[in-house]
Length: 104
Image (tube, rainbow, N blue to C red; front, top):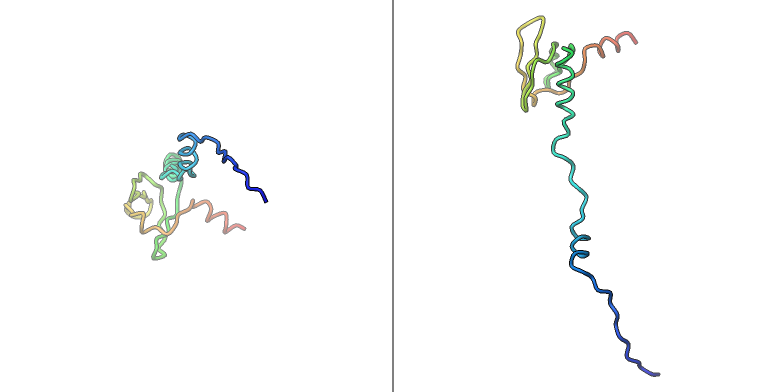
């Protein structure tokens, strides 16, 4: 058996190519999508009658006058206007959706 001397050939890798591969990661999603802002602005502009269901099951009806990061103001026809903290809201929907579901 004969042993031959083989020369190891490695391609030269530049530093930029190595760092480019290791740094490429999936971009994290944006912190804010503005979907909530768009929804509130649309309902405020149209003065859409809304139903707000609180975590305790209470339903409040009215239109959204303004909102901020932690609260929204609900203008009501029957009863005083309310500032509602968002963390106390279970969900909300348009009042017309309630009417549509009753007619089905």
